[in-house]
Length: 147
Image (cartoon, rainbow, N blue to C red; front, side, top):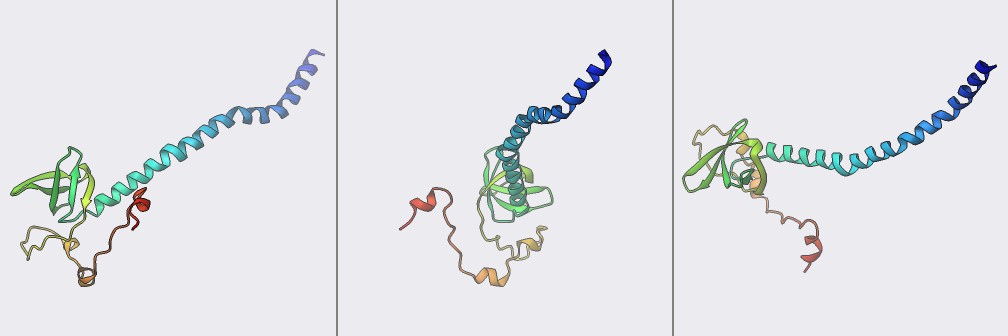
């Protein structure tokens, strides 16, 4: 008799145990979803924007490095940049140390100096003659700068 009662109890508990187990894991699943949307996803978005920004660096851009050095990009190589931080003072930095692009300027006119820059510095004629578009303020500045 003892075996049949134990078997009956486990059979009945097995059907209700699946819902109970789901209810035990529901808070963990909810916490993971919240972490994904509040922490992981925004971080991945920022990393992608930073990768795109580093890929779009070109001669003439004014940048800030991770060490706080502000300068103008003079030469772009595969993984290195030559940045002019003062008149006739140039430093080589690794591309990934650039944290911010302060100003995107037109590429410096080299006149064929042969310094190894690729065609990525060339400005198409249509873009060179186009009027510069004013950047729209971001964030709260949109509302404060109305005239």
